[in-house]
Structure formats: C-alpha cells, structure tokens
Amino acid sequence: MVTSSYFLFSGVSLILAVIFGVGIYQVNNQNSVNTAPANGKPTVTASPSKNAPALTSRVTRSGKFVNGEHPTKGSATVFIENGQWFVELDQEFSTDKGPDLFVILHRHPNVIGSSKPPEYSIKEGDYILIAPLGKVTGQQRYLIPSNIKPTEFQSVAIWCRQFNATFGAASLQN
Image 1 (cartoon, rainbow, N blue to C red):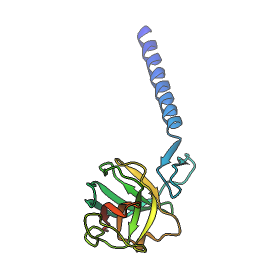
Image 2 (image 1 turned 90 degrees about the vertical axis):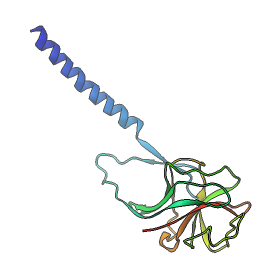
Image 3 (image 1 turned 90 degrees about the horizontal axis):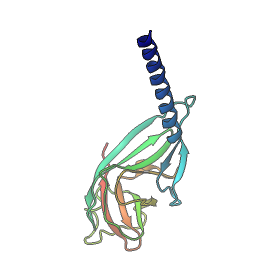
Image 4 (image 1 turned 180 degrees about the vertical axis):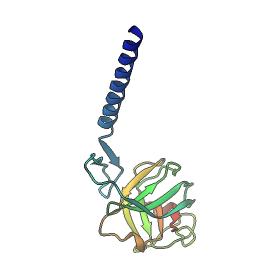
C-alpha cells in the first residue's frame, strides 16, 4: 500500500512539475525582439498564441560575407515570413566596430569586387538602407520596409555611412 501510494504521489508530482515548467516557459517566451528596424530602435512582437495560424517562412536567397574595409564573416539570408521580408545575419556573423554602421541591400552581386579598396565605397542609388547595425556579432534580424522590393537587390552589406566604407558584403544566391 505504501509502495503504490508512493508511485501515485511521484506520478502526480511529475505531471505537476511538467505543467508548471511549460507554464514558466510560455510566460518567459511571450515576446521576441526583432533587432533594429528602420528607426534604429528594437521592436517587440508577440509570439503566436495557440489559436493563431502557424508562421510561414520561406528562405529566398542567402550568401556568405567577404571582407571589405574590415574583416566580416558569417552569412546573410533574405526571406519572407507571413508576408514580411527580413534580412537575417547568422550566429557566425561578426565585423569590426565602427561609426554609423548600417545593414544595406545593394543592387550589385559583388559589392567588394565592383568598388575600390581600401574603403570599398559605394554609389548613391546602388543601395538602400535597411537599418543601423544592432551589434557587431551574432544572429540578428532586420525588417525590410514594405516599400522595398528585395528581389531588385543582389547583396547584403555592412556599410559605414560616415566614411562611405563597406566593411563586408554577402552576394545573395538562390
């Protein structure tokens, strides 16, 4: 009798622990942060609830960064999720600190090869500013404004606006 009561109590305790743990997880994960949209300030978007439709995400193009003015590594991906376009830099992304750094979309597939060292400066009209770079390392996501057609651009670059210097660029491939 003691043994069966012990197992019943243990089973109920385990179930309660799982329910409590899931509840804590859901409370802690209610919001996710999208880094540095067009205005440069992070925005918070609510995670979908159980009754919300599932997120649909489709990667369209991606590429690996090559060095320009400064060492830059990692990958950039342009994708659409629930009707909105994003640029995402992966966990391996890193570049040097610099003033006035921006994530841009560029019309040319080889930004570094089409520009001149050492600055790798770019021409007005060949690019569009997406957002100020939120951090110099790690995964981050940027919303592409709805008035921009990402399919018209061939590269993602990290660009210093103050000195017109391209830190690094990733040519986008299907």
